[in-house]
Image (tube, each protein chain N blue to C red):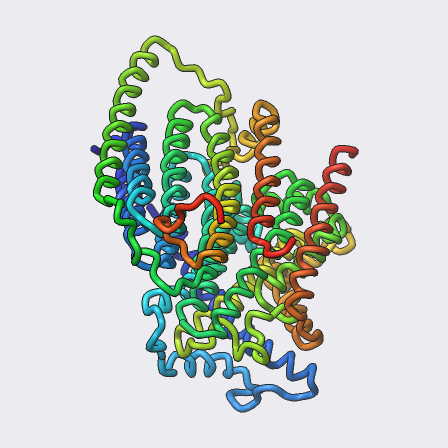
Length: 182
Length: 102
Length: 332
């Protein structure tokens, strides 16, 4: 019951804020709604037993990436509103239509995979490759962080190193792009 | 309605995904389009975390960590491009970004 | 019901009130200490030795007229002070004042990461406050402030990682317990980290010598130039609450939290006659004194020096410290 209340509240807020992000007139307001949206998604992660990812979501997304967006919105101090000029060939409502098609498609996939999931679960087709380990501590103390670190540095070591390379490349690229004179 | 299954999370994720897609297709401010892409990535993350909890498999959470890393890289480069573009054309309207070079 | 709802709510109420009262007296303490540093008396009129000044100041701020500039973004202008105060107060949810569960609201497994991530939200208040004022100097100040906060956050976080490496836990209670078991405060194990966190903490709370976002002489007051009355006092509260947070982090990570000095020396065991929370708060106020002392002593950095210090000195040292800690951890 409590889970249902939490889920529905969060779901409504997350979707509502998502709509606000794409419909707000001022870009700064959009960024604000985006921050709150990310914080609520982090709360959702906590309810799904993923504390570490939730904290990383707040730290990296809400505290890092969105600050970057806010910076750019403030630097790009627009003299004319970007929505003023519209390409005459642009037909905006088809965007909504296409998005509706995407939603229908995704929902169809979800339902299809749920039915095959049940069939698979019945046949015992699902086995976790990297299961949650046992950790017998107090109620508030879970060992999500330790487990995740363990998996990340053993099974996923090479992807992890690749991600660090990607970040390095992105850092160099961003500096090259944003700097006037190298 | 009262019992929350992974299906609910998947539908939430799909709806958020669609909001992001609408933002990308309808808005003309490049920065807002980027933010919509972040919404899409978040929708995917919700799905991964929910299924990770359901299947008791940490792979989903590991994926989310990677998605966040890639999102950070994407934001850095993308916003760098926006700054460079704004410096040259004084606009962030996607309809005015049509030429491939100048 | 009593255990899960009433007791935590009571704890939160007591804690919030304690923090807010502490902030008002911290302001008085700052005025007094700076006055003494400059051979003055400081506030003396209200109450004996000016002690009641701590109550007079907030009353004055609350009664002042609350002005919103005509061209300001009204909603964001109101939201900004709240966004800077709330994270500063939320952090206290995981700060342990003593070994017993009675002394903290919660002890979560990712406590330290929680503190780092929540404090990183506080930067929004400053950026948005400057932007929403729709005025030159606040905007400049808020851009400066956010660049400064983000740069120093990297150094502080990197440094805290090396402390985590020595303890192997992110729980704040666990970190203090590790110091009790080791019998040694981490100030002696990680002296470089202590310096880095303290300097970074000064920068993150916008305190002198890193108070560029509030440089009166250059920016007419900084990001809160256009604020007055209650909303200004929220920014003010947030800054001082953040000082307490940074002091608490330094005390927990490096000075044994609620432990009496030298917990492993039997001759000093008599120090345990004071309850743990007295030790903890005493240490916090010692560091707050150092904060004020530094403000009274050092001149302000220039902006390029500030960024140079952050990126070219603190971050490389933090990375080096992390690498050395890792090597020593594997070696021993």
